[in-house]
Image 1 (cartoon, helix red, strand yellow):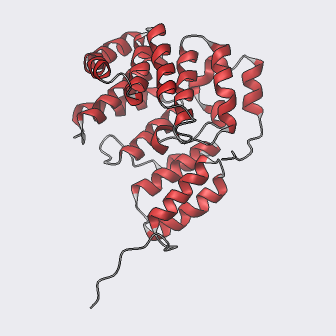
Image 2: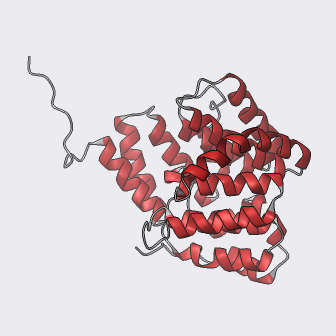
Image 3: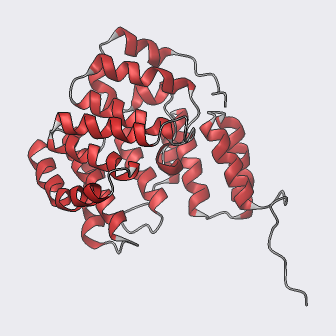
Amino acid sequence: MPTPSKPSAWDPRNPLLLRDAAETYTVLRQFPAALKLNDRELDITPNDPDALATRARIYQAEGNLPEAAKLLSQVDWQTPSGLLFYNKINQLRLERNYPEAIRLLQARQAQFHFASENEKRDEQVWVALAQRLVGDVASAKVTAEQTRNTLEPLYKDQPDNWYLAYYLSQLYAAIGEKNSALKLAERAIMLLPRGKDAVSGPAWEENLALIQTIFGENSRAISTLMPLLHKPYGPFGYALPPITPVLLRLDPIWDPLRSDPAFQKLCEEKQPPAKP
């Protein structure tokens, strides 16, 4: 009996090809087309975690939190897929349930077997930043200081590493060190600008807007956000959807900007698909 051949790159039932296409349409904010491709992938691989993560991100970008919640209902700290877990944390944030997000992150830190120390370290930064955003400044500083001693020496040895600059900027934001946080956020953009990486580059601009917002630089944050609504990009290696007007309305990260008419205008924009 002949061995079944692996699906080729041109096979219309190649799930990897379908996933890449769905991710591309998500980056372009063409969400109905992305969902159709994701449907086809899930028909072939119904329980594939990456396919489910893609679908959750699309629902979140559309503001369809109930459907995203159904999809992520069984995701907890033990979930092997880092993408699905990060989608769950993002979902809890969009639902304004920071306490549960922090609980899951701390449980994962304490009990999960991470594939690498880098992965565990990155999630420690998420804990610290979530604690800062919920207003628990004291806990955020304690958590961040545990990671600081690891990240700072790494960045000192690799000052051109945009990935380390990005995470260190968030760590400084969690601690409350404004100048260092802004400097590192701007450096991450310089090291990997949108002209060099059109997909990931704008995500570092979104990170800068977040840090500007945390420290009350509201006008600057809004100016940073404005062009992102019309740029195709895929934050965090496609772990999150690109900014949309509905996400600006839902995400508590941007609450400090809500009274500004310029931000309100961004939230009311009709989102055309981004052009490559």
